[in-house]
Length: 209
Image (cartoon, rainbow, N blue to C red; front, side, top):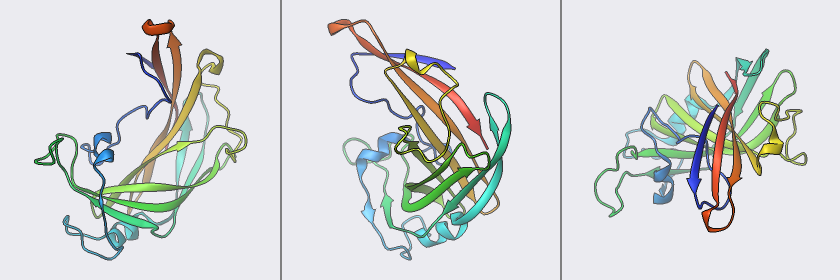
């Protein structure tokens, strides 16, 4: 587990880590928008969203190992393109290239994620991100409320009573030959009160596949 403390922070917790495409994607790109493109349009990267989806779509399964012990089989299923965007790299002034913020395609698709043991049986829309035609990365925040979570998973890796809120994130990479990823948690807690109060976060590992 890892713990961080950030002074005078309000609001919900963010992702336990920055997103990553080929080791260089950064969440700072999210605020820089994108240009809508057709599914079959060739992007400035030299490939289309359809080409990426031809690699990432369909159903695939992989062994999943729980951090607290035990294993099962995880299944990911990706559907048809809902929308696609090309995101160019730029710095704060709109010129040049931000370190860690590179040109990529964003492809919105429906996804289903389940585990053979019934812990997860979720369906949602995600954004695939790709800097090349033969692989795509995604991250999704899994809603933990009993009304939203379809599987039987409960947070037991940490004591939820110690946090004001707990978040769960599914992330992974899809290629023509495999699907691999992980499930990470983030617990948000408060230290102190008033002007000197601060919000801290503690990450914890749930599973990998």
